[in-house]
Amino acid sequence: MSELVLLGAEVAAAAILVLGLYFPRHRRRDLVVAYFGVNIGVLAVADALRTGSTGTGLGLGLALFGVLSIIRLRSTELDQHEVAYFFCALALGLLGALDTASVWRNIALMALILAVMAAVDSRRVLGRYRHQTIVLDSAVTGEAELVARLEELLGARVHSARPVRTDLINDSTVVDVRYACAPHRAVAPVSPAAYAVHR
Picture 1 (cartoon, rainbow, N blue to C red):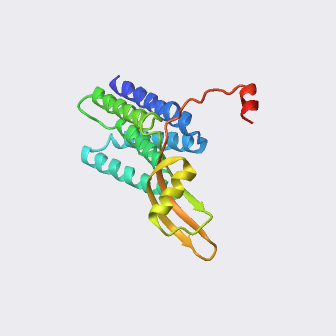
Picture 2: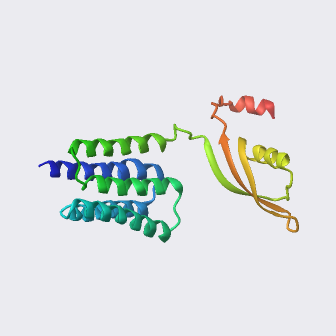
Picture 3: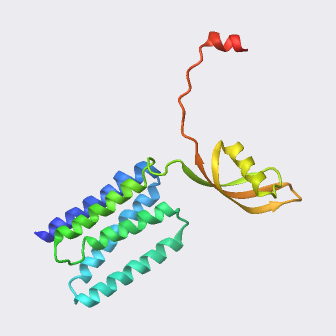
């Protein structure tokens, strides 16, 4: 009975992770399939290994975790938040099959994973901080000038501006920027009459 409870909790946790957290926020259908496939695959293999000796099952389970991680991460380019969801899917699969002293301990750990991902991947937590690579149409060699140019262009506070390539011949600069967007401010609507007067 406890095994069925743990299995049901794992399936529910995986569905919440992928369909409740990841997909509504990032909208990549291919990774939804990958996350579910990895999660259920790890759950099935870890459950099968559980019938063996404790030491062998644990060792093979950890080896499986490492091998699947390497294969998945080398097969396509993933953003860091997608890597985090990938490892959470693996962890949930292992928690759903590994023997522990208490089933509720595993369920509590699953809930902890979901709670942490729900919090740290929310736009309310550090949502103003962004990162992108920008190509400027001029060769900028001074750091202060580069930061000032980027802040004017982005309308944001630049925390880090790392030049990737400065082309003096073609007059361009590729820069890796980390910045914080300014808080959105409500703008009062302008009536057509007032707009005509200002013109």
